[in-house]
Amino acid sequence: VSASIKSINFSEGDFVKKGEIIVELTGTNASTHQNELQYQLAKQNYEAAKNSYQNLLASSEISSETASLQYQSAINQANSLLIDLKSIDNNISTLEKNLSLANESLQLSRDKISTDLQNSQIKIQDLTSQINSLQTLKMNLINQINSANDSELSASEFCLENQSDPICLSFLENEMALQKLYESYDTASQALNSAVSQANLGDLQTISQINQSTSQLNALKLSKISLEEKT
Image (cartoon, rainbow, N blue to C red):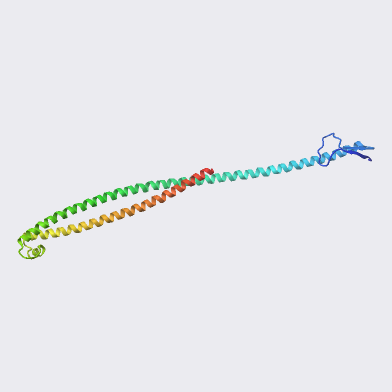
């Protein structure tokens, strides 16, 4: 079919509407050529629209898959945080119980030590009273011995030479009793000092454990707050 183009009414890439004249031809069968050109252009527009839709659909599927993965990751992280929180809660509960037991143990230990110290002090006071009484008796016996002793011998030396003398017998018995009391007094004093040292050491160890557990407890509580802020 022969014809010549009279005018072109579009630019490359333009969208056209159905029935719109895009090319005007002159000569025989010009209308047929015009219809064919319009068809080709409409076909190109259709293919372009189709490709655009398929690209958009593929992009939407990728975005949907990415969103699904991100959502699942968020769920996993949340579950992990909940597990960590539960573990921290359990540790906090254990530490709080241990702290409570340690404080109770410290108080019981101090009460027992206080009672033991009071008993030891009472025993020492009683020994001191007995020693003072025997010392008074000793001085009286020495005065009696010196009154009956014309020599320059001491009371102890005189009584060693006169053991059958009643006053000397009392004096020697008093000396033996005093010696036993002094020994008991020394033993009680050493026990008291040892008890005080052990009590102080025990307190220091228990207090150190309490302070350490308290620090761990505070650290766990801070970790819990941090995790709760992330959930």
